[in-house]
Amino acid sequence: MGACYNDEQRRFNFSATYDRRFSKHVRDNVYGNINLDPLCLKFIDTEQFQRLRDLKQLGVANLVYPGAVHSRFEHSLGVYWLADAAVRQILNHQGSELGIDQFDVQTVRLAGLLHDVGHGPFSHMFEREFLPRVLNGFKWSHEDMSTRMVDYIVDEHNIDIEYEALKKVKDMIVASSDNASTNSLTEKRFLYDIVANGRNGIDVDKFDYIVRDSRACGLGCNFQSERLMETMRVMGDEICYRAKEYLTIHKLFIARADLHRTVYTHAKVKAIELMVVDALLKANHYLKIDSYVCDPAQYWKLDDSIIKTIEIDPDQELKEARDLILRIRRRDLYQFCNDFAVPKDKLEHFKDVTAQDIICSQVCGRVTLKEEDIAVSNVKIDLTRGRRNPLESIKFFKDYECDEKFSIQDERISHLLPACCQDKIVRVYSKKPELVEVVSEAFENFQLKSLGMKAQVHATPEKKKRRRNYYD
Image (tube, rainbow, N blue to C red; front, top):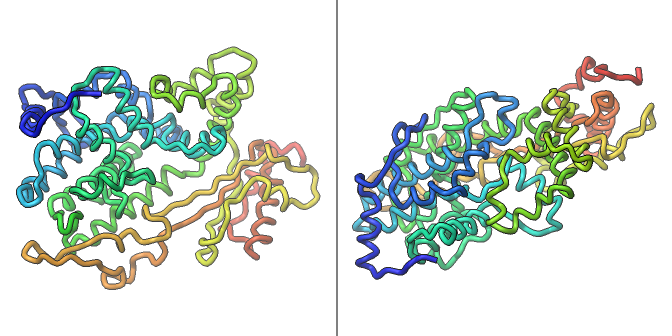
């Protein structure tokens, strides 16, 4: 799987990869010119990496935000560029102290480039909504698939990279996941926090997608990653930040949460996602989509075009899936009925709501609801650490003359900062427009039964209830 080198050859090999004579650059609409070194180009110029052009970064969000058509490809280039900038910042200021060399620089930026090469179609929807319903308990993650895809690319294209470097790149990709290698994180642990930070959530992956996604959706973004990267410092094998940057870091997490609420979990975006998931489930038996995810040699052929495949294949087995795609095209979407935010005192033990929960809350009426009439979306929005405040895991320093690192409590900064770090929103949709009123009433009854009150902000609008209501 690649050649092995001694230390002298290794230093020569990796310093040579950044020779500008053999590099290329592309024009990025966020950072300007991005220089691509020869080793990274060997990965980029493969059909497996080029597949990322056919994976929209925000899945189906472009059907609500028309400008959100950017792909995993440009995001990956952006993370590569920021990873390089971050590790070089540390190298320039603390390189000799920390023993950082070009080998470390190369592996960090390769990890940034390849961290999403295992992503599936339609952003996280494929992994979190579709696969759990077809894999029968088998655990699958795009981070793990990224590492397998890296191995596959190296073998398939005979890329000359040593085993030690390859292993380090893969460990950096999964550093924030449950499958992180604890053995690899004992030396220069801070390097593993640059691309995917499992310790406190500050990483260049977020730096890129927060700015890039905000721009594509026409939203403002007042977070500036440059301030953090210019002032960060490694202390005790972890990246620390100046105390005066506390609010800058807070803006990072708030910007991410705002994007989740405004874009990623927008009510209409979720409606379309629910329809796409249903279409994939109905098409799975015929297309055998789930069989692709176990083999990198097949998996790289899977991208967002699966929807077009369903749409144009005339086979009768795909009719139900094809009809759902047609409904999306014609904007005949699952109808949002209502939602509520789970009260703060019930967050810890509140279970996900199911369609069956809504059905069981229906009182006798004109029509009896069935499970296939209802779709429920349980949305969690947090600051990256669940109910915990990620700022509690971050270490700060006073100034560059001080060698002490410390934590800061929110109340010492401002009483305006949120006391709760997680929202859970329950949304209910009617798959048939004529059932909106019936589903809405059952949903209200569910709230009364489970919470003792109607937690929704307002009633479902009458005009939505009356829409195509043939029971009137």
